Image (cartoon, rainbow, N blue to C red; front, side, top):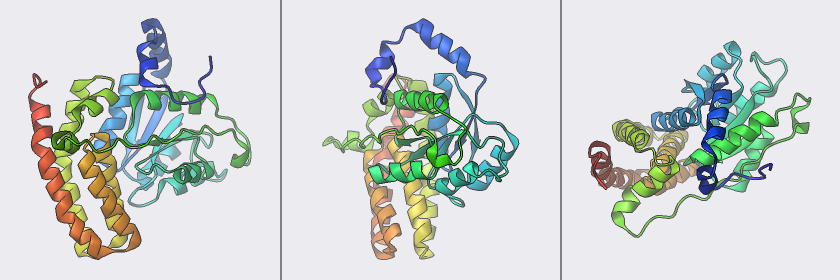
Length: 296
């Protein structure tokens, strides 16, 4: 039976093991590209893809992505919409142009973004993307989106007449009334990774290591009165926090992103200590999760 939308996680539990193995054998030769500037988000995407049986290269910015697409015949790209040099919408439009220096103009493109509105999904599809996934990424939704996007590719000009694969954005999880779960919702995080705690610990450790660098970059942007940089760095933090279920950090980063988008640097400066404090509340909980394998 053909799926008409992303499956629920319970559907994955019902998949016969033989079907999974066959699917993995078919997937392994496919070449995928992950375009994502945040290291935590890179780790999440690569970890989930590996768990699904795919292999992928990584590009950390738009220029690197365009160089990779010019030299390799990728079948699919997971494309972050907010990048430090060229945004994902422009990259998608570039790919679809017949005169662009890319190997595969018909590559399946799935947007990944921390934004969750229906308008953002339409914007992605109008740029020439096949589908849309909101962060935090879920293994089952990612699997469905890739299968659908690759299956429905068609070489047709212009691109607007090609069948598209809308992927409904999932609403972000609500903050838990439990302060520790709001700082780091372990259950939500591990569940999204289909119970793979080893992968979860590696990703969480990368987030802990990377966040001080992200906070320093955000402070520089605020001090330099660079509102677009505030928006971009806060957006990156928001997506990474969502991917590790750091829900409180995600919400404060969202406020900073909105301040940067509005050019309100006073509000951004006021929220910066709040973001640092949110991370300091989450850090020991995340570190305990990373280093105590017996912690239940």
